[in-house]
Length: 87
Image (cartoon, rainbow, N blue to C red; front, side, top):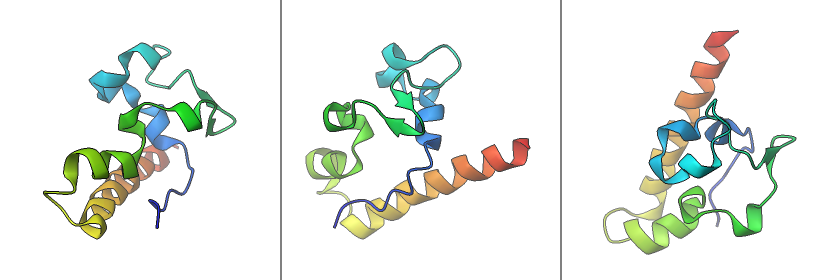
């Protein structure tokens, strides 16, 4: 079962907080590949943008998949709630 992404695009609007994605930052934290709320390089996106791949390669020895998904969902909720508070 893949990560239950809501496809809100919030993670793609805050890449300035991820050093590995600096080359994709438009200058305001938004990824250059975010188009119509979708990633236009989704099939070729960087590893760090792929929750399931990151789990398999780097975190499976430390967390079970449900715990890892929950941590990522917490970040999603935090980003979404911060965005809602702006309006």
